[in-house]
Figure 1: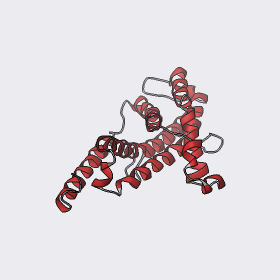
Figure 2: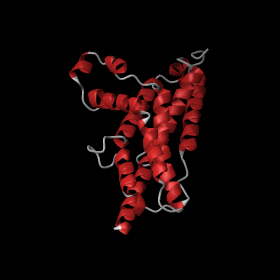
Figure 3: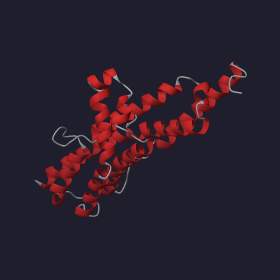
Figure 4: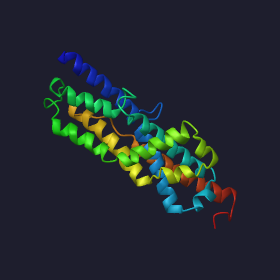
Length: 215
């Protein structure tokens, strides 16, 4: 039984690693890096960013929605989704004695801390789920009539979302590291640099092709 539980644990963990670090399709790490850098660019340039390239305005919203959906599927209620990270942590706590990290069985207090770290962000999770269920995935009658109402009923701050996503990434990364004392190389910096270079090139192109528009 111990061997099958360990194999189950490692298989599930490998799937989570793909979901956060994967490149094709992009995982949570690249999605977060792109979103965070787009926000940073807007913080630097303000609405002038839309003059550099108007398509960046809807692109930020698209990146934001994509990040919400990618995060939501990992934080589903365990009874609704076997792949939920909460379900994974429940599995780990239930089978703690039959799971082996490099240093031995995962300490119960570590697993509980991971669970509590996610639960402490429940208001952010609920708001993301609300937007997904009522607007992104299914168009509730209320938001069909008043689309902007979704932001009032399910308010979200970018910093809170980023903190939640980092918490999710942190849980998976910790398991990956503790299992083999190694972890996948993060691709976040690569995507951050790519977005920064993109905006710089767009700005240079705008100045060259449309002199005076950014002055």
